[in-house]
Each structure stands twice: as C-alpha cells, then as structure tokens.
Length: 66
Image 1 (cartoon, rainbow, N blue to C red):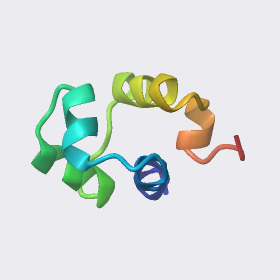
Image 2: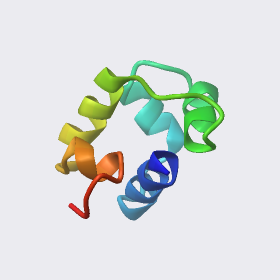
Image 3: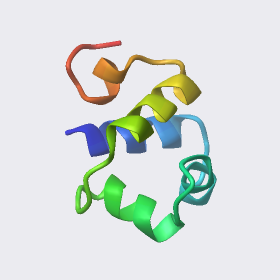
Image 4: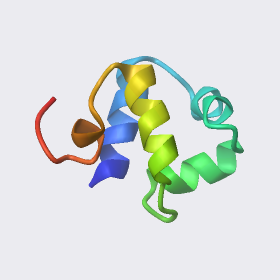
C-alpha cells in the first residue's frame, strides 16, 4: 500500500512527520493518518512527495519499483 511506501521514504530520509506535514501544508496529525492508511492522500500531494523524494508517482503508488 502507498501509505507504507511514503512512511519508508520519510524514515529512509530521517525526516519527521511534522517536516513532511509542513511540506504538504497540513498538520502532523493529518499526515499521521495518511501514513496509517486511515485517510486517503490527494493526487497533488502524491506529486509533491514524488518531486521531494525524487521518485516517480508510480513508485509511491506501488505501480512499479522506482
């Protein structure tokens, strides 16, 4: 699931949920729910994360392996 992938990307880059929440212009609590799969992530935020981590949106959405 994509939420596991975005958590792995964040942890691999030694970033906090608060840091990514700020990048996405949301709260840490809301971002936490995204990482837990409790809330869907919007397409525009997937694009922001893909650019930030320098990966494809397909990678984040687990459509391929980078």
